[in-house]
Amino acid sequence: MQETSVGGLRPFRCVALVLFVSGLATACSGTAARTQGGAGVTVRERDFHIAAPEVIPAGEVAISAHNMGPEAHELILIRRTQSPLPLRPDGITVDEDAIEGRTLGALEPFQPGSTDVLRVHLTPGRYVFICNMTGHYLGGMHTDFVVR
Image (cartoon, rainbow, N blue to C red; front, side, top):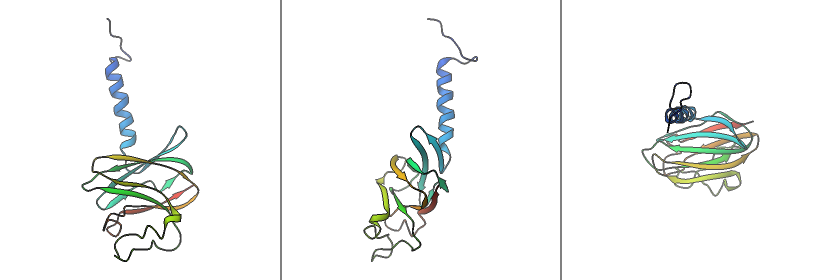
């Protein structure tokens, strides 16, 4: 069987090049891109930081959350209001029951090095991503963004 080439590259090298370039496109922290049927958003979590785009397009959105470790993290999506997020009596975690009506979705704790996807419909407004593991929110694991 004779092997053909494309632009001087063998087929397996072409496939590897395409996979490499597509991997580079999604490797940047906090990116938003249009995908078929909505937007694809990349969010990266690590102790004690969440990197996400500052602006995300309205509509159907697939949020790909990457846990950069070194601990398990969760990702909770909340619609923002003027008032600060209420804390539980422990004083170090957000009272999720008090904001239940504003919570659009959540990813349960996932392990370092893993990725999870949250699919939501976003309308224009202000939102925040948080990790509410003990001490993480107060340690800085939250980031605001706008949906347009």
